[in-house]
Image 1 (tube, rainbow, N blue to C red):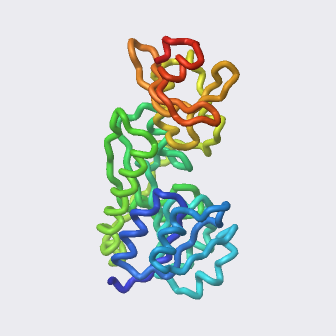
Image 2 (cartoon, helix red, strand yellow; image 1 turned 90 degrees about the vertical axis):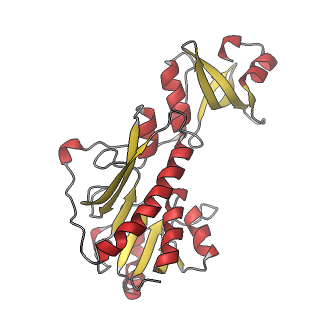
Length: 276
């Protein structure tokens, strides 16, 4: 166990491999995560598993005094969901680090993985940055490029990126603590941003470009999900393929029912057999 003391700040499943790796190597003073809404976050569940101290403020500034008293050497942040104010970032001895699933400065913001798939990118990656008060804008500590597979969904790509960045943070931390890494300023001329996604982003018109539909289904699986209306009925679209430059529904879930093949759905509703 290394001597450095860390407060880990994160919420979603993307943060889990990094937290578990850090638990094995460093002293985790506390875990800061989102309040239960109503269920606990994935990060809280892991923290409970390891009997770690857990802080769940509505605003992270509400626990400034508590975190200051812990005297951390470093904050590590991964998919937390809040912008962290400058005065909070200045609590640790070392500049706080953020784990981000894109090759910054490309795709700053909350949905970089989905955006990479939606844009048809062949590669993406991950970046570890020193944090400042601006969103994903701090100096780069480390980066790694990753291939996007043709069948990658948000879920599969997020899982792979999370595992890779968990390994990378363990590799670079000893050098970071010894001041042996020179941070690289981001090129602001290359910045692009992503947006917060809602369920409405998943709405699909089955007559639109098949390639765009296919990318959207993969990018939004499992959340926010993709859906359309057929015979005034809302239907979730879980998996599609492109056949003869047309979209083919492979797996769907009608409202209030279990998932089924597109063929079974359309036979049961006697509509548009060209879609399976």
